[in-house]
Each structure stands twice: as structure tokens, then as C-alpha cells.
Image (cartoon, rainbow, N blue to C red):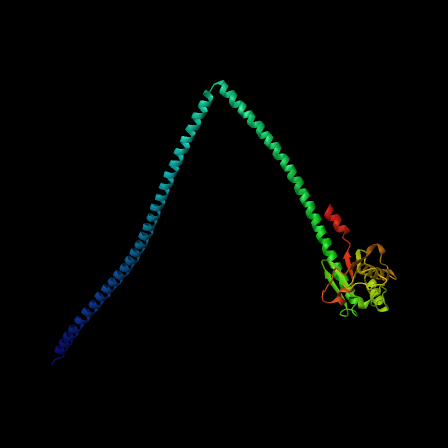
Length: 321
């Protein structure tokens, strides 16, 4: 083969190979163009769907707002109708008042005089009632002031009672402490009804059938006197009690009354001897056999009771005011 033929053959083959390569490149270019168009279309579709969703949302909001406006319109319509009814009533009342006013203006002088007289009588009646009300107000003020005064006195009385009760509790403790060696041996110390009761069986004080206090009894009464001698606001009652046995014939005592009084008097004298107790604060009394503490125990009934009571003079003053 000649050189020219070979060259021609090579050129032919090269041309044949180049033609499919261009077609492929063109095809690829068309594919890329189409893909770009598809992507753009998809993007527009997504935008369209988003816009559609926004439109739907706006539509729902508009529908909701329309419903609210319809309800508001209904309420306003109801209110308007009610206001119209009220206006009609007010207008009718105004017309009625105008009519009455016109009739009053058209009335004759006699009716006007009667009306004036009635008004004057009504004014005087109101003045009288006002005076009565003012007088009642003054009386109420006086009663309120009196009530405040009474409340103040009641508070003062309550404070005084509490102070007396506290003082009596403290006194009971002192008396119990002073007589601690005798309690349970025929002696008791109790606080009852704001008073202190010191009860001593006769065996602690007197020999049988006697009104003279023995040495042991003098010691007991002396301790009690020292415990209470500084109490300036204290009233002391000494009571003698006996059992139901009759006084023996030929005795120095006429009867149980006489015996109980003399025993009480003996105790009073010992309380006053050697102490600063004021005699004016002591009372001696005989109760005989008539106030037993135990009908079945004569020994307990034979006793001296010393009753310590607070001076209530100040309380009585407060109550009496």
C-alpha cells in the first residue's frame, strides 16, 4: 500500500471516530439542560405547594375571624335590641313625667296651696324626726360611753380577781410549807372558792374535853401565825366544830356551842400572841356539831377550821361603781 493510501485510510477512520464523539457530547448537553429544567420545575412545584399551604392557613384564619365577627354581630344585635327596649321604657317614663308636670302646672291655686301645705307639714315632720334621731344618737353615745366605762371597770375587776387568786395560791404554798410536818397527821390545807381552809383535828390542839391548847398545838398555831402575819389584805375566820356527843353533866361547858366557841377563841389568842396579825382581821366563831365533814368519823368532825379569805373591799368598790 502506498503512503498516500495509508494516509487516506487513517483520515477516514479518524473522521468516523469523531462523529459519534460529538453526538455524545451533544446528548450529554441536552441531558444536563433537561435536568436543570426538571430541577427548576421541582423548585417551582415546592414553592407552589408552600404558597398553597399559606393560602390554606390564611383561609382558615379568615374563616375563624368570619365566625367571630358573626358571633359579635349576634351579640351586638341582641344588645341593640335590649337598649332599644330600655330606651322605649325611658322615653315612655319621660312622657309620663312631662304629662304629670304639665297637669301640675295647669292645676288651680287651691291645689297649689294644698300642695304647699302638705310640703310644709312634711318638712316639719322631717325636722321633728331629725331632732328625735339626734336625741337618740346622743343617748346612744352616752350609753356607749357608759358601756366603755363598765368594760374598763370589768377589766380592772378581772385583774384584781386574778391578782387575789394568784396571791392566795402563793399563800397556800407558804402555809403548806410552814406546816409540812403536820399535814397527813390530822391537818389539811386546801384552797376552795378563792379561800384557804386550814383544818386541824382536835387531837393536834386540845386534850379531850378541854378548850386549852396544848404545847404541840401552840407550836402548830405559831407556825401558821408566822406564815400569814405579813398578809395585810387577809381576813381570818377561826371556826370551832364538835362531834354530836353531848357535853357531860357537870362539865365546864354548857353545850357543844359553848365548847366550839371557847376552842375557837383559844386559837385566836395564840394567833395574836407573838405575831403582827391585826386583831380587827380575826373572827372567832363556834359552829357546834352542825357542820360535820364525815358523819361516820367523829374524830374528823372535832376540829378547828381556820379560813383565810382575801379582803374584797376594793372588789366591792369596783362592783358598786
